[in-house]
Length: 396
Image (tube, rainbow, N blue to C red; front, side):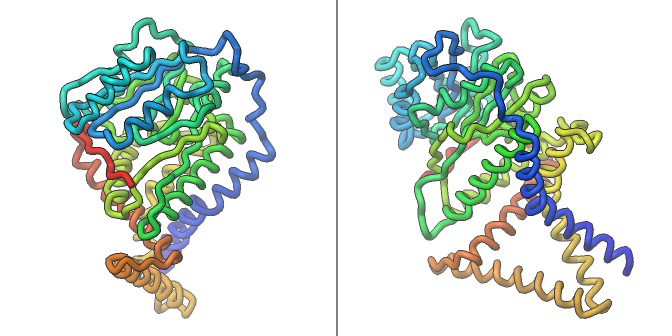
């Protein structure tokens, strides 16, 4: 029984630390050790502003492309220093015609048609390789077709690169397109909390544990293209920046609006794909977990690794608790609580089919199903990941 108790409390402690105590700790550290004090930033009209290349992979995105194009060309950043590169993965829905028209209308829009099934990462890598005269201090902005900028988003991302050690700056993602029957509130809450945690990491330690792939900027000298078969290129690029000696940060004022799906089945499959990529990255960057006392290893363990192991901790807590129900009434009560929570998750799933939503139940269901996505992603990554042939996520 001692072994079961040890396993149970290790599992519980790991879950509580990752989701509760680490955010509180990193917030405290951000107050005590504020690394956001920059030596200088570029001025909006500074002649020394770097050249920016925006890279966008497209596959059947005609519904969002007009707004994406407009938000990319309508900015307060000098237009002659912004080049927007679209790559179409054999789109068949009219996206190519929209991109061809934008190329003719705007002098800084570039459009490339690539063979179908190249994959998102393959498209981005091909666009990057095609940029002529790319300089080490040029800035790459990697963003999705369903992500839209404000007027000053590009400048807010770029201003921090006045610091020569700055390698990557993440944008502040705001989810839009609410559907009250879906998981909009839960997903928006998750993204908001992640933005905040990454901001605290940047201010406390000088680096963030992975940028949101929806929109982030990276200096060319620190950029390493992700392998084409990876499913989480944003984390790969972010970690390579740290390996190459660069710093990273999240800029709260670099606001981007993401029109994403709020349907649980769609988001579930997307997170399975992302988690497959997470475990691929673990196979590459596991040495950065050592020694655990280093700054990068501390955030890697606290923010990512313990979460990636979360489903196994949840299973371990449940099974070990089952062995402890005869020890005393406390463990019996905990086991009953776990079963009640699982029952509530099932109730939420059933209510969802009836178009009924109870906020508390939906948050519980969201948490458990996203951990299930982690578990499925783990097993799929073990089988191996082929070329990243992708489908656009259903938009609101």
